[in-house]
Length: 106
Image 1 (cartoon, rainbow, N blue to C red):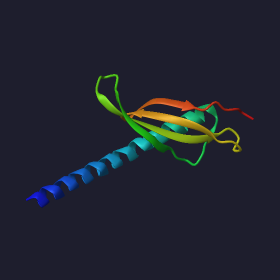
Image 2 (image 1 turned 90 degrees about the vertical axis):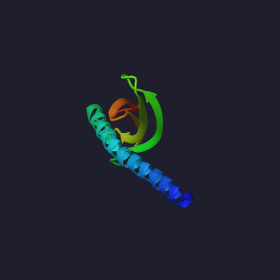
Image 3 (image 1 turned 30 degrees about the vertical axis):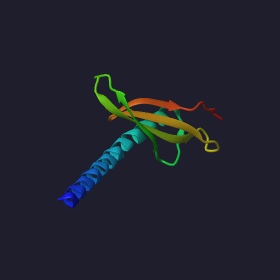
Image 4 (image 1 turned 135 degrees about the vertical axis):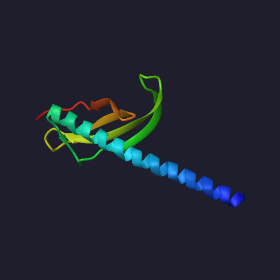
């Protein structure tokens, strides 16, 4: 009986992390699209065509509910010779903040 409960607990934890990873991949796509739009707005080039998950924390949403904040980083360039960093913060599925490092245009 104890072995059965242990296996059930292990499978539940594994299923939780699998669903969490799957949902994070969806949020990552939203973050990538937001970073791409922001780079296009500023006339800079999004490098490596990707965003990288850097941290996960909890924060209260404007509605008062507790939500996950995922912080994604990306790199961009103004002319292809120097890399700058950017950050997208996602509150749930919504873009909370996008920041671009101070950069120079050639």
